[in-house]
Length: 94
Picture 1 (cartoon, rainbow, N blue to C red):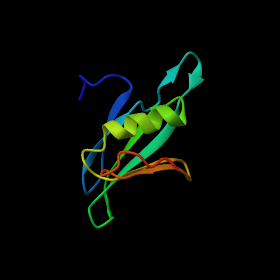
Picture 2: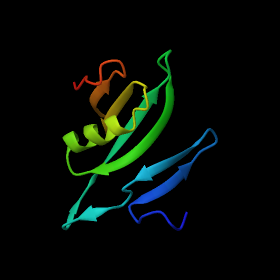
Picture 3: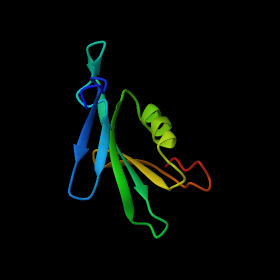
Picture 4: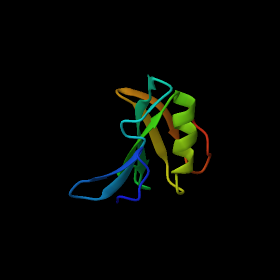
């Protein structure tokens, strides 16, 4: 894992391992916000989760779309749900 960029770390739990993008990363003196990306199974259970750092909500939503892999996703910033995006639609911003 030493070859990962400084703004990426690897998180594991008893179920799976996740790449955490941008953990602890700052740019231009301003801290970036943590966003959680959840992917869902076809029966609407959480299949996986990732944490990314972005400067804006819109940037987080765009990065989340890149992680969809044909599944529905939700984008959260703390307790605030930003979007639920259906794989069949590719859109769904709240």
